[in-house]
Length: 381
Image (cartoon, rainbow, N blue to C red):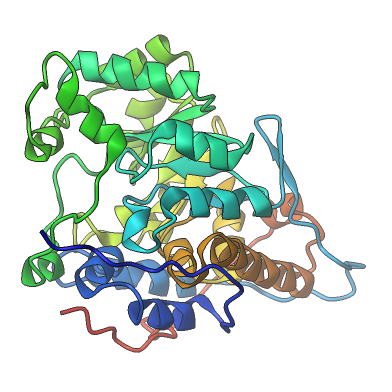
């Protein structure tokens, strides 16, 4: 049986930006695992458009606004956060660092923001909760066809003090990730939360293939209603990219909308998440909070998302690169780096607070915005 060797690093890492950090992480994460983390579906058009699309809107600098030392602090659902930048759910942190989710959770805790645990975490819920030590945390839920599984996981999530459930509606089937196929990638690490399903009465003796295939594809508004009713927790529907989906989610009682295209890992040829955000925001009409992810690599990206009606902005891949390079410290450093960039942008844009950013008017870019982003093509296969 092959042993999967991954990073054990823990200590400050020197990097200029997250694009540089990605290249550094590629040198320490095993090839197949890095391909899984960094790649997207098919031709990766949507993956790359996620980053490029931020050029569709421009931040006009403002002066003589009496702005000094802008503050990124916000209060969300009663919790005081260092920044509206939060942790997105990402599977299998052990692919990047031997300390797994305990390290990423500690890094997020030390920064002071919300942590979203993936159903496909490589540590169990109590271990992650211990590392979070009271930090507000949400749970990303892959809904099963088996109601016993759903009730069991919701019971566990409530017992561990999770404050919200994020229903994954954008990944009812796996995307065509050709890099994974070329690398013959299979998960080399265990995932305690979902593996536990195998030992429930209706799943005894089943393989992990059964667990993955047990995810419900025919999700409906009734599922949102049921999760909210059974759990008693706010439900954020993750995946709406158009008005119709927003109306269905809100009509079913969703407490928030999470705008994402799964980082370009699901449907290639779809719109960039930032372009979808503006359509979704119109449909939401400030009735519930909006969380945004996919393509965030810069503080200016965070600024533009907030100015486009996002309330929280989530980081995925960049955090995993920091985790790979230096564990909990690297995780914290990624949040700090992007947050410092955000503060710089806020100063130059004449915005003192996040509330000011949310009222800032972006300018449409009338020119061709297919400008390459700051990244050499990564060789993933």
